[in-house]
Length: 496
Image 1 (spheres, rainbow, N blue to C red):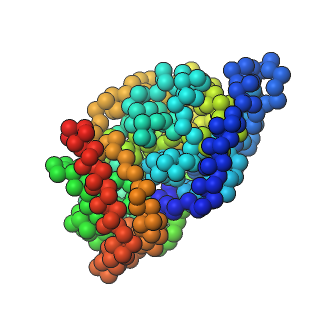
Image 2 (cartoon, helix red, strand yellow):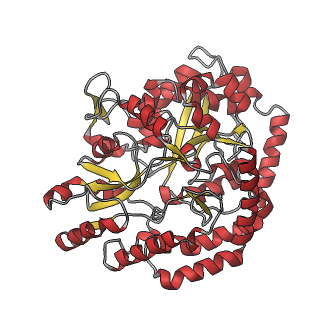
Image 3 (tube, one colour):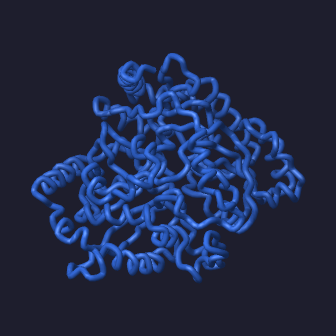
């Protein structure tokens, strides 16, 4: 997903102020009058909720939402229109949509896609504390409390996190058909450097296959936690001094970028990687050997089921609970929503009702999937027309199981969540208000240099010094200084 972030225009500030005035004047009273009585017997006209979410737009999304709407109309007297925006375009297009006042009720946000914390502070999302208490009891009873607590911004909830894996763990994913074909050993793969012999073999044996698949959002893994996802300011995971550093100046990142450029020059990485918004077509075709992804328990089964061929993975990092993972998938209610109460009713239903959750995730039974038994489903050929990113759509622990999933899958998730290690800066959320001008300038520099460096497209010996200098000129050192002041205060307040 796109990590690019630009400051909102003056228009957003005006829209936010206008939304606050409407709220103060009781702008949501229409919903309040009919909310809570949203059954099929309600005399009120059904509310249509506009839902923006991330992912490659699916051919059958309107067909599925028509069925979803029949169900939600009966349950809460609301229908649903889903608008999907592709991974690489999501942040930029949502910035425009929010700033222009495009009608919307529910929208996907995360630490890395349409930045949750920064946009909450800018007034893009509605504060949900009261709505949660009144219409979201099921959410509070169902979702792991760590998600709701870890997604608070300045003490308030502005979104409903997906109930899913809590730690963030990177893995190398492999197209197992090619692993088996060439009898490759993936058991000892861990570091970026360790994958080189595998890439070399595939390049030689299968020159038309993309050996190392990635899009423009790829960033080499280094053992740091980013203060703001994919901006060059981070704290080392084993820190003792809690010092924020420019990630581009660390020896770990310099080595990683050098290795990536070596892989790019060798032809392991697609020439257009730095401008590719998604690798979805590659995954569908099977014309790839390996990539890096974030995992969860039994993820290999999910990937294999989705793609229609075996995918296996091996760890590329430890399992760390970070702000990015806690805030990795959130549904917010727009500050300009005309139906905030009904939106919360829908989110409550989505996170507690297995029928709705599975329809949104897997489509229409008999068309996109079939039940194998009470718990397991199998994709049908038409499932390729509705292949959704499960993590972005609500409470994952209500989902049907894939054919090879054990019955205790969700218990394994809970165990995985309990065993994750906390990042040293977990729950620290940087407030960039005082450096807003510098943040905007740094974002512009990031757009210029980041993707080409991270994918290995350009030589770090030449471009890394240019990028570091450009970030400094844009005010990165001032941002880091402000962030360090806030982190030091947070550290003292939390007895770190």
